[in-house]
Length: 238
Length: 325
Ligand SMILES: Nc1ncnc2c1ncn2[C@@H]1O[C@H](COP(=O)(O)OP(=O)(O)O)[C@@H](O)[C@H]1O
Ligand SMILES: [Mg+2]
Image 1: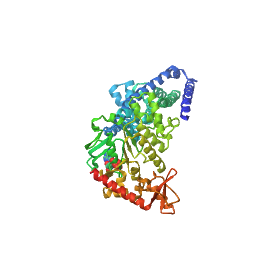
Image 2: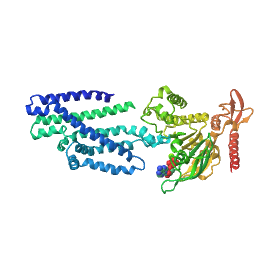
Image 3: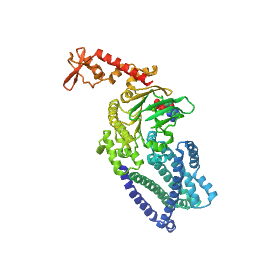
Image 4: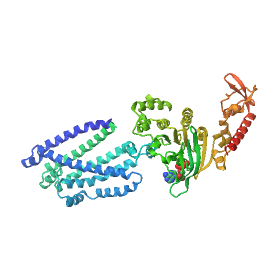
């Protein structure tokens, strides 16, 4: 109930804050600043940023959730440690290095940034999928099997629903971290709110820098809210 | 009917968990696998629904090797109850009970009616409990739901692994009573695992006593196990209270001296156990207790007649054994 109320109030607060940031950015801005901070330009940067995060997080989920499921199947349990190791490497190498590596393969642009972000967000999703499934009470799984559910039915009807909150928490972490990390995408020419931050830094325009930083932070909160809301919706539908 | 034929199970290359088990559970009877922890009871039980596969030997249901049936199909026809219950925490009571009927593709109305019928059977008022979550139930209520869930598709066979092990003694006794009541009407073929000899004596038509290492020490009726333990292990496992326990299995009618009675004080009914009669005898002033059925006096029991009944039941068992072998 309290979670529900929080979910309802948060978007209003976030919208108000975004409007506040834009108003502040425009108030007393000079012509060159307005060239970067025009509402249309800001919207474009936000869209770029969101696209980077959405695509990379979706791809990470598409790879890491099935991998996590596979690594918790009996007989394939040995897969879990090496998989987690690879994902750990993906996360512990600095993002900028991952981006540089991807850059050397795919060159400049959206694709390179997505690859970098994707590599970076595999770990939280994989780790939580494995932890969520491993945390399901073995007695519940045994009861399900003993009643004649096939392995696929046990996974779909019992294990996955029970692991779901933990899996979502991993996706949420990955997506929110991605919003922050995507600010680096500008270095491989993929735009996003990071472009505002670099322009602001390079030209010593604090107004632009702060606007980029504030919008990035608000976007992170918005993404966090959106995933929580989707998860809540999915839960009450079941 | 369930039949084990020389069934052995080894996990890895350790000693056998179950060692050449051969026994037959007649249809409609309750067979209790009893013995100390690690005796291979759970292993033996899970071979019936193929959660465990034998290393050698085979398990037959109605003459058919279970290994020749697809395990998923097999299990839908066998009720399964475990100590930890294993209710699905994300589903309400009704959805839990409906699990197997749903797997079997029953239609909604039939499932709903069946769920209510089963909740009634296990003593949970459907209107109150249908939409409760497992976390909102007491241990005893959970166990009832577990039994209802196992019975949902009306399986001819029921496997129960320490079904009343996780509840307090008072609840356990009540669940045992209810099990006996339900089983008297349903007459399923039940294999029940317990390490508690009292529970085994109470619930079983036959007891299979398994020793550590998975050796079958004795397979017999409760009366026979008490009167004539086959090995020193069984005698030890049944324990010192074995004579007193036998009094639970005999009735006043077995020790009745018909005619008039000189006794006063407490009286007993002919259907009461000899343990009840013994208790009455100990609290009465005289050497006998009147046996009263309704309003009429049938006779009396005395210490001598109880002794004779015990001796006689032992002889009966010995005769049974000779006939068996
Ligand atoms: N899955 C398993 N892997 C290895 N050993 C097992 C397994 N299940 C049971 N055992 C061993 O087999 C023996 C019998 O176990 P079990 O059938 O559970 O006995 P009980 O139910 O009588 O306590 C024990 O020594 C136990 O450690
Ligand atoms: Mg056991």
